[in-house]
Figure 1 (cartoon, rainbow, N blue to C red):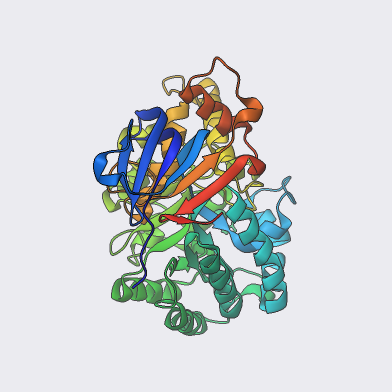
Figure 2 (cartoon, rainbow, N blue to C red):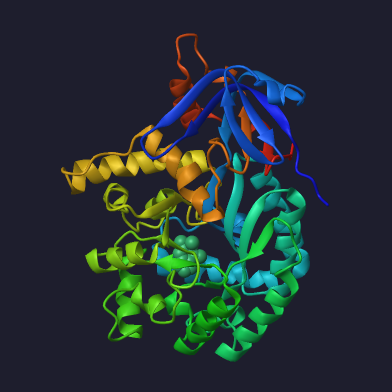
Amino acid sequence: MFMRASFIIKGDICYSENLENLTTRENSYLVCVEGYSCGVFDKIPDEYKDLEVCDYSDKLIIPGLIDLHVHAPQYHFRGLGMDLELLDWLNTYTFPHEAKYIDTEYAKKTYEKFVGDLVSSATTRAVVFATLHVPSTIILMDMLENSGLVSYVGKVNMDRNSIPELQEVCARESIENTIKWLDETKVKYKNTYPIITPRFTPSCTDELMESLGKITKEEKLPVQSHLSENQSEIEWVKELCPGTKCYGESYDRFRLFGEYSKTIMAHCVWSDEYERKLLKDRGVYIAHCPDSNMNLSSGIAPIRKYLEEGQRVGLGSDVAGGAYLSIFRQMTDAIQVSKLFWRLIDGNSSPLKVEEVFYLGTLGGGEFFGKVGSFERGYELDVVVIDDSEYRTEDLNLRQRLERTIYLSQHKDIKHKFVRGNKIF
Ligand code: GUN
Ligand code: FE
């Protein structure tokens, strides 16, 4: 049987206990037994004294970051069309580009770059959109599995309102493709899991949504999609789905909104009170993607309000709506847009703090994967080891070093990465 590793990491350790509380432990020992954390100690406890010690003294030790929403095929054209809003950007850049993934050679080349860059980033787990193409999606899943990262990957469903080169001809064809893909991938991997992925309501007929809802229920599969990102999109959904009280209902009426399985909805920039209650009641995870929301002029999601309401929130890069894979970057963007929200939109709100965005990018998103995103005892152990010497000045405490790392670190500063206790590099 496959055995997960046991070892100890020595260094300057930071992790979230919860939204408010960040634990910082200088020169301490993080104990990993068979891939799980046994906690952080000042001295190595006797019972663990025979374990190997990885000495990363003076380095920053943090949980792996979690990307709750990223489009792998879009990595290749990020930074283009950023003068457009969502629907024009989809039609002009995104759909024609995703259509290229009918070519598996193209998929191999571009997915290799995406996975390589994700591995060298601070992200250890991601929830990923592929394209509607089954062979290319399986190529991506094979590569992610080989990388050692943990991921959910969705073959995208879309049977209306796209360009002819990127559309399944009918709901039946889309479902047949989905079943074929699930048959091949459901039990193939250790760290890579399929997730049901209706692109967004404008891309999916009612017939397709209904069948996806049935598959989700029968197979107990998780779901991801987009919700209330852009005002023109929301108006369009109202026209497409008469009688629904909010955009979220266009998923919920087909049981694709957290009723049977865990669900991520990206954005939720414009969710009204009714939709927010539905999100809360169903325990849906909100993927906050501030880089994307700025680039596509979508707006500012009211994350402070969501946190006060007790919503489940994590961060997403939303490449290529977002131009950067870095979840550190999403943390700083989340702080910045929350300041603009407070200054320009709602003076009763308050900006997000470093502790809070660090929580969102680790524990907040990590919960989708189980006990993930912290070093508290019992959590699965994903670790990133960072050399912050380039921007570390003598007078900084550990919390300040973490803050500077969030703002200033680069891929080259990430020295080692462990996922589920396995050393990736
Ligand atoms: N809504 C539907 N498809 C997409 C996409 O690819 N990116 C973003 N940001 N929103 C979407
Ligand atoms: Fe997206």
